Length: 138
Image (tube, rainbow, N blue to C red; front, top):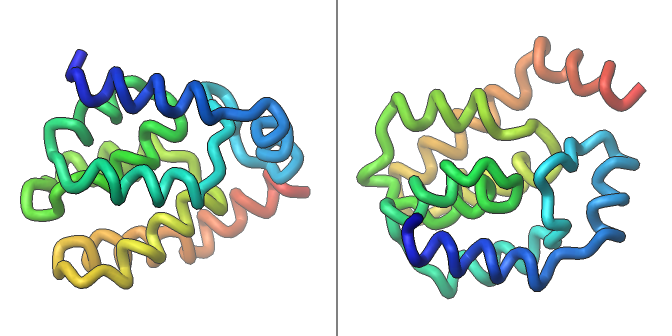
């Protein structure tokens, strides 16, 4: 495993909270494989990690919820492929944290990040996805 990914998983494990995981379930956010790290802490940690495509790929491969969110925050948008984005879209749970990550990317100063974020927001706003989320919440 990529050394940075192993360190990131340890960081997530130390900062996870069962209370946060329970809160995720209450709001219909899939919590399987979640550590329970609040989004604000993920954003702070992503800034410390910086942009790193190899780290992002390794984090994604772990399958862990917050690791996948970190993937979107630390990957170098110049190296992200359409195939990779399709895999992310299929594998990232659609919920408040995913929406927050998409909004943050859409407001980025980098064109690639803005495109990724705007595409994610467009997908999250689709009638089919909204209907699925409404069924989950209801």
